[in-house]
Length: 198
Image (cartoon, rainbow, N blue to C red; front, side):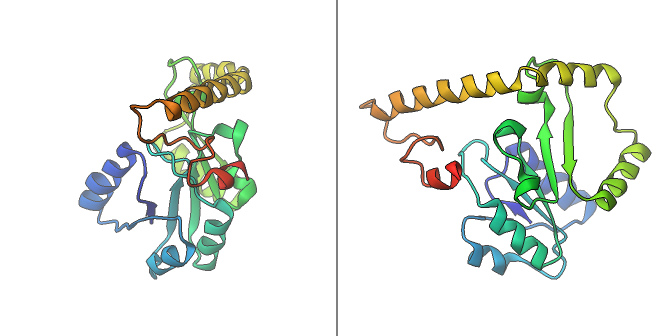
């Protein structure tokens, strides 16, 4: 199961690679309502994939509540935390089994590395994924690790500045007479503003 507002590349991968080529079934679901989400679980639901905030519409979801549902149905709960970064949010602390970060974006910060990071709290699950990674040869090179580490040293200040600049732009745009709607979780007008603050 995957959030219905997931990044376009992820959605294409699900539809065109996994769905068509691998025979893996998936369901896209709005994960805003826990009662509606619970109805989407099936006997064969193995993974719940959430991106929050979503790209590009900036929807925010209740990670703790979704985690409880995933655990109830025995599904692994994965959260793509690329937009919020580990500086703003740690989904594993909120009940996620796996947190995914794209180190290519904020963590790397210099547009010179293609890398992702998986964070887990479960040693057995880590060992399963580590075995697959080693077997497939998908580990990062030492130089790419250096580039990501270099970027991580300035992550905090870059995220703070990006957020303050984005909020200033969003507030300015919200007041502009030719703009009808601005979607930014930092604005009080955003439907999930309180959840985002939480």
